[in-house]
Structures are given as structure tokens and as C-alpha cells.
Amino acid sequence: VQTCALPISGETATGGQVSDSDPSTVVIEEEPGIDIRKEAEGPDSRTFVSGSDVVFTITVENTGNVALQNVTVSDPLAPLCSNAIGMLAVGASVAYECTVLNVTQGFENVATVTGETATGGQVSDSDPSTVVIVEEPGIDIRKEAEGADRRTFRSEEHTSELQSQFRISYAVF
Image (tube, rainbow, N blue to C red):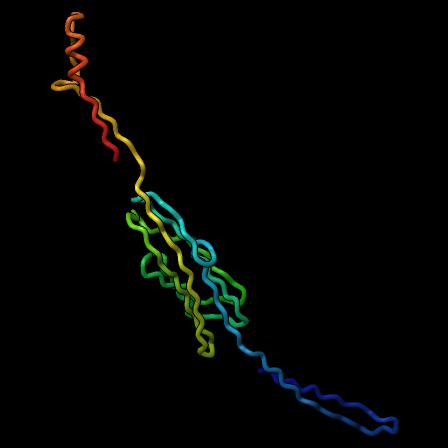
């Protein structure tokens, strides 16, 4: 709330003094706002191979018309992404990265930011992010003969016996 009174004074043509004052009050409504983006605005989904370290980028912005205090980010499924930001001026933003190590199962989690105004107003926003885990494709081929893996034959008469003794096994992982 701003009140301003501008007094004015002057002199008449006959030398008399005149003055007036008209106070005016301007009320600026407090419209606090805050926004959080985890990796991308709105729902997003990313795919990783099992065992990967998953890096998130979190951005918090004060979108209102008043400064915010006690700004904090909570992220229950990615605790290293939780952060105490503190003060956040009008229009200011903070961005940071955090990592969830050795992710072996997919999950959807939600980062939430909260803050308050100097007059006690509360603001909050949330943004989800989904991690999809896939198994790394692979193939393993092993070739082995009965007994030792290496055999030496010195004559042509053992060729048919050699061909019948080899067994090839395939295992896909």
C-alpha cells in the first residue's frame, strides 16, 4: 500500500495565498507465484539402461510480483535433488543438477517447490519426471568341444569323428 499526498500552493493575482492537498492511495496486490521444472516442463519420460546414473536438471523461478523466502525443493524418490534455496527475488531463477546413482528400476517421481512471502502467503508448484529402465541387450556365444577346447589330429581318418564331436551352444543374455 502506497499513500502519497502532493501539496500545492500558489499566489492569487491579488497576492493572496492558496494551497491544497489531495492524498491518493495505491494498493498493489500481492500475487506470489513460483514454477519448478524437472528436466522439462510438464510430464516427461526418459529411458536408461539398468544400472545407469540418472542426472536431472531442476529449475525454480519466482513468477510472482513479490520476493519469496524459505524456498525449498523436495523430491522424495530422488533425495539428492532436494534443496534449500532460501530467498528468491521477483523474476529470479535458480537451476541445478542432481544425480540418482545406479538406477535399476523405473520410477516416476515429483519434485515440489514451496516458498512464502514476507506477509505469510504460501506458494507451491510440482513437476513430475519418469525414468524408464531397460535391460542392456547382449548376446554371448560360446563354442567348446567335448573335453579340452583344443584338439590336434594328425591324419585324415579322424575328420568325420572330429566333425561329429563339436557341439555349439548359444546363450542369449
